[in-house]
Length: 135
Image 1: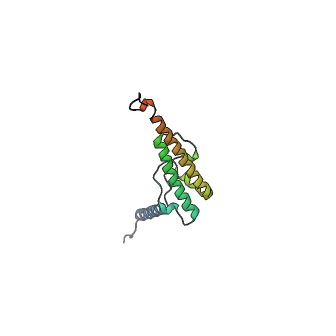
Image 2: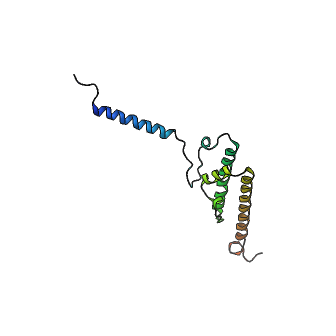
Image 3: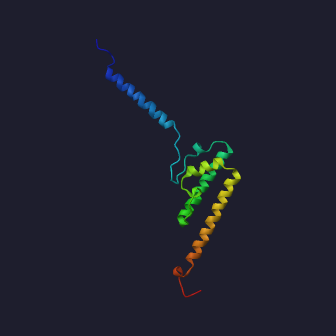
């Protein structure tokens, strides 16, 4: 009489169970935000119920919007507050006081407004004007 299971069959079955277990644990882990991309991570992963986490989520999204505006206008701002890394903004806001986060957003808005007005003023100067001889 032949044995119902062969050694090769048992090894294959064990390997399949191991691979399925690894796949299940890999799928259960929450994804991290993409580095340097503007696509933000899933809301349920980065927004627990604590108010500081909600503020950090809002701050990181607002920062990314402002940084992308600055890049589109070619303002040339540099530094950690002008980075395109969502997670840097999120982690900074987790450690910062709420008032400081709001002040930083307002400061970036002022910088963007200055850049926008400077670009408009430069555009209205003579090389770009429609009729350079008119004032």
